[in-house]
Length: 343
Image 1 (cartoon, one colour):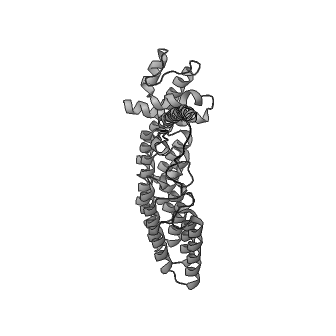
Image 2 (cartoon, rainbow, N blue to C red):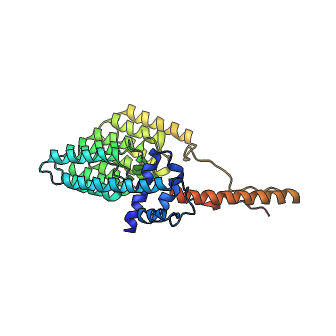
Image 3 (cartoon, one colour):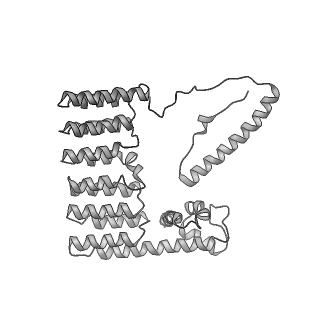
């Protein structure tokens, strides 16, 4: 129950940016507390557990929003259950799309209920349409994205699968397929039977953000299945334009070039690699900086005293920033990388 309450609170956080007047008051409290404990505390006029204070003017809005999202999730689950009783693929797909159009689907349990119902669809094209509607309408987590990919692969190896893969690049959580879902995305792309579809899926993944080197190498191995030099050149272009040219990536790149059919294609790919190496400075990524690991300089006693005071202030600001990042975004900063010593 506590986990479900906290999920509802997070669901509210997804809604808060749409209501700008709520955002300052909700950003931290909604991440910190669950719906039940938060609403109970607010009803008593006290701040929720884990939150030092909350603006009294906004606490009613906060409680109302928690209640609103919870009601919406309950209504969505009822409609999903009703859609699941449909006696045809067409009716089931239409019912699920109506749910996605009419509700936030902010909770993981609600999205999983939607996906469980979608798993009954027999038509690959209808299943793809229902999955893409979920991607378009709802917030997508690792769990949701993983189940979408599993169902997409299970139902098709052609255009319907490709449409789901490409939709993953169009959502605001598209970084999922360049992080925790990259390997599953590549496994799904591997199922595509059309070389043209495979080329498009690989290009979508390699453009424009970088991947880890082993994932680029895996994508290059898949590109070896492409029959057309033109399709292979398009994939290789994304590697030289956007990916880090580590030794293993370049080895995979050259292996793919060797399998090209024409001298002109091999020459073009080779020239692009050499040009990209020059731009990246050998094996270094274009965003890398060859910076020294430290500095040593001498100052007099008065300057040293003043610098120590300023350094303490900077360290305090960095600690505050670290706590805010961890609390608000779930990100942590390794402050040791910014350590400064004054002896």
